[in-house]
Length: 443
Image 1: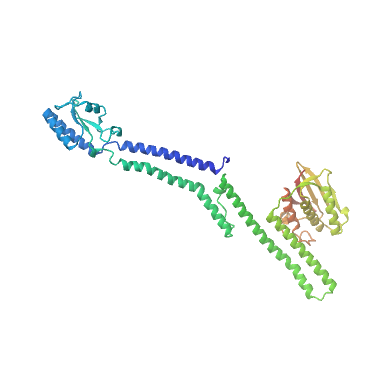
Image 2: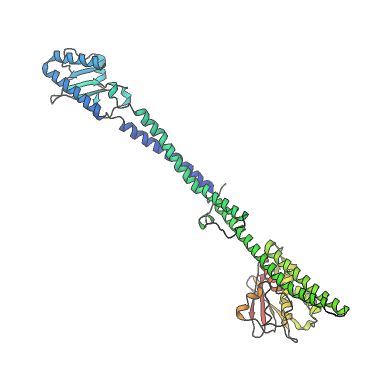
């Protein structure tokens, strides 16, 4: 069953309105045409008035003159012709027969609408004088008011449906065809790589199927535009980042370094470029695919201990310099691998920018239905206007935070994977030090 915003109801209402309007307009036009065409024309009225004047002159001359005039009139216009007094008695010598008296009941004034039920030649009467004398005559065929009725009926029957059909087509075009044409042009714009073209708000704000299709197409356009822009930016940043290790490799190859020193240099540069490429590909995959991560309960304390072991092995820090204050019931809803990657990137960043004898601490506390995890270091912090910049790819604030041998991808990847788990991440200064906060759903 279509919902209440479905296009089906608009089309049903439009068709029903069209049918009812056609019926009503056709009926009204037919009534008006029938009424207007039932009156005698001015020429017919003038002709009948002339007959009345002739009959009145014959009445003044006597019954014989009336008989002669009636006979002459019937030879000219065959049909019933009577000249009667106020008591419907003939003013000539011949009285009306039974058939004529029966027809007199249907006689109507000559200046009133004619009825087709009385036949093609209805009986009409005209007053001759103040005494009630009348001329009753069967309307001649050439004076009939329905000579052009066939044309008028044809106009009344066919013209309204044509006009209403044009109006119906125009409304249907406005409702259905025009939005579809706009969607077609948007699809052609995508095919032509014109990603800056967006649909009008009048289409995307509709609540029917076309509005839903328009919003989906606009989302696809924006998603494709963002993906292309991000990929182009990543390629520019990656090419820029690769220039430095490649330049160092060229210098090392052109120099006369001992073989073992040269091999160590090449291995270090290649490992760095490998990490750079892997991080860039991971970031591009997160931005373009936006995968649906399966979330399960994760024990933060166990995860932190595992990450600290790897971090101590990589950095050479003793375990006691990586402290924690985690309640035993700290369980969050997240993807284990993705959350481990995010926390590991945050911890590596904290270790990299901490002083030689510094410490890093993870604290956790509940905030309603969420857990807030905070990783604190003792580094120099970040300028206030750069706190958001540090989560962008290839953003390195080494001037404020020395010791930057990374590529500026760790926090960017952490931000993506936390967002995919329904959480959020941000940084704030501690003076001294920096705190990176992660908020995740409580189990």
